[in-house]
Amino acid sequence: MERIGDAMKRVVNAPSLAAKYEELRQEVLEDIAVQQFISEHSDEINTEVVNRSLGKLYEFSTASHACERCPNLEGCVNVMKGFEPKLVIAQRLIDLDYVVCPTKQLDDERRNVSKMVNSMYMPKDVMEARLSNVDFKTEDSRVQIMRVAKNFLNTIDSTGEIPERGLYLYGDYGVGKSFILGALANELATRKIQTVVVYVPEFLREMKQSIQNQTLDEKVEFVKKAPILMLDDIGAETMSSWTRDEVLGTILQYRMAEKLPVFFTSNFDYDVLEHHLTTSQRGEKEPMKAGRLMERIRMVSTPLKLGGKNWRD
Image (cartoon, rainbow, N blue to C red; front, top):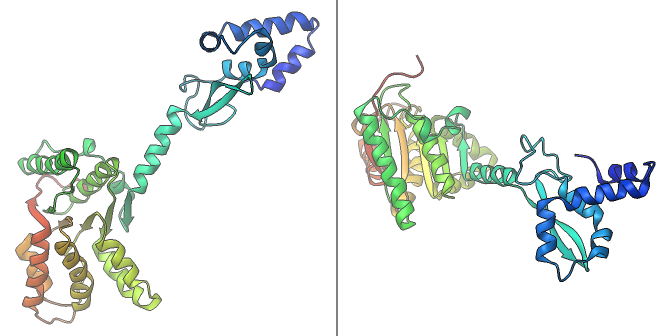
């Protein structure tokens, strides 16, 4: 886009100043949007106002509107990237007010959506997943999971309330359990619902280190109070009595009491997970404590098996 100053220099340096000025003036006044604005404000605009506002009118007429001349946000041709000029009346002259263009508005919305999902130790491809990219048609179990996930979202849409139970997705390695979690998190983000997605083995290792730097309570509070919590790959960790009872137990007890949903993925069904939780890192058998944790997991989730091929092969 030609800068206003350059355009005016072109006019001033022209052999016939009056002719070039009139040419520029006619070029501006032939713009349909300019004509419409002048017509709508005919009681405030006369020839003198137009002449004194010619620079602003030229800037408006040569700008990109509704992103029609811009390939993307970075390639915006307007004076202010991501903004387009609107004509206004100010101090009895025609002036410009810059407003956010459609492309920047979409970009801002995407950024706001991404802020609604907090990922802890999760792979990038999982956190960029979308439900439209999940193959739900090749397996009966996937159709059922799709139906339940849609019902969860529809309940939010129709009532404005978040259901009390999430999903416990279990199945073999590589069938897409984590991918579905990421896709659901992004669907929830478009509804402005904050989700915290946690890769459990790494999270529990981090909790042990957090005791030393005194950030344990802060991290546990952040996770347990999330509107929606997703715990990925529970059962893959080496569980100690402390991480089971003081970390996971504390988080799930709070969410059960507050009726906040939790989504899980695991290679284990409920029974196998309970057996896993029974034996601590030191080899101690603690079935009562494992059973207590499983009771909380059952209260905040509904188990569904995910079948299908291994997408990692």
